[in-house]
Amino acid sequence: MASAKTTAPSALTDPTFRRSVVLVAQHDDEGAVGVVLTSPGETPVADILEKWAPLTGDPPVAFFGGPVALDSVLALAVVPRGRPEGWRRVRGSVGIVDLDAPPAVLADAVRGVRVFVGYAGWGAGQLEEELAEGAWYVVDAEPGDVLTDRPRALWRSVLRRQGGNLGMLATYPDDASLN
Image (cartoon, rainbow, N blue to C red; front, top):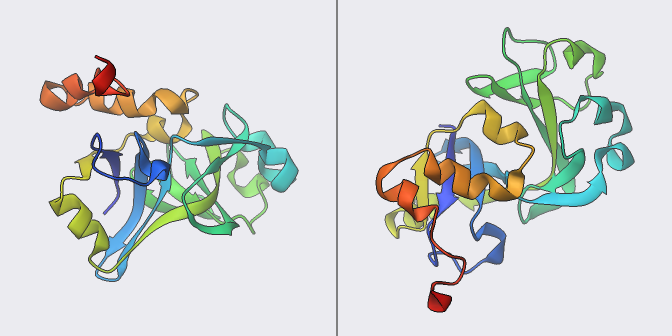
């Protein structure tokens, strides 16, 4: 299952996930793995993966993928057509990049690459519990979510395109007590 998950207001206390959008790349009986799409870092991709830097989108920085395995790096790429070597489909045109592959094998196929330090992970049943508590809204991911040039505005953008009550939630202030 690959989908975007957006946090419900005040449902999670961990600031990592406050107003975040997480692309869940894998979800099965053993747990779930995803990356936070809304947290660009300050380190240029060129400083950690120089050979991949020319394929990254704007902003060309490594993103904070989540609080797990902060010593690891992974990358997602949008591939509009085909299945190039060095890329494994997650959903639609979004897939995981084999960072050991030479970038040249993907250069002509990808629309862009996004690099993440760390990831978000849930043990068996943990994400299901959080969903039952109403901590997350599950919505369909779009390829543009991965490569947005406005990642800090993605939470509002994803909710707004849902329409209805979720669309209205996009206008919810950061601190409702100030309203």
